[in-house]
Length: 139
Length: 139
Length: 139
Image (cartoon, rainbow over all chains, first blue to last red; front, side, top):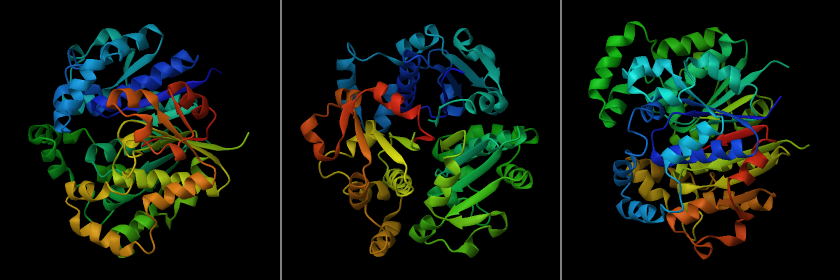
């Protein structure tokens, strides 16, 4: 059995999603399988045009206006969430959307970026993958 | 050895506790053992009459007044935290209360819902269970 | 192979860092190896004079002025973050600083408490340790 990393992404915070993709892509780069389960505010970020749009307000909420500028300035070297998501999918990572979240938050399939979602599913799918994973994190 | 899921519930946020119980009950339904360790704001939610009372203000804090209404409307289909807690205990899940949190936050045993708590304990009990678990999450 | 606990500390919240060290030192006390990876707001706390300075404002932000007083009163019995960090290092725990965070937040090596940091490193180091760990948490 191949090593596996399975992440739940519940947070919609830019920095947390950022670190989720760093761990996910790092795991892929080291030859592991990776599954990411997006729920609640994490899933909300997989709506069309939401992934890189969010940071500004989130940053401001944290009083990080200046930091955001710095971030932007560094952008040449630091990949965007959008780029990291693309890397993830192209390297064979799987993205699962929590269907219960869709019910609760009133999200329809066509609101989401279906082209990058491997499957819409419930908690059973998560547990099946997580119990055979070396790394399990809730982010 | 049976597969096991061990969760630390540190957050008092409604949505996070909700997802903790979804994972916990899903694990039980798939034949795994499950232990939940409640600390800090998570433990605070196990005070009498706190579990389902909390959401409204938390939701408003997030600017989710409308969402809460939606949630309520869907309630026929989505189980409440109270119901999920009852399912968890009846299916044999274990709930542990962090005694250090009780010291720090000034919580007495009689403030808590003792009937659903398996044991009051320290970090050693957590580690003993977690190191033999397939799924370990910090929520 | 010895049992291992590997923690990512992304949060800068006093209570979360507190519980990270409780788990870390508890694991060491039970004979496990422990690695802690500090990223984002967690790493920010490893700047000089930041570890125990932070709590007051964070506590106030949560409306916990009174609680903080209580905490202080209990201090004779409850160890400070500073003491727990010292215990951790002396018991052989390893602290890793995320170098990408340093780039993004503009943190220099000399801003950090270099004497307690085992290494400055990237995600690969984390994954190498985490995939052979029994307990992996994201805090």
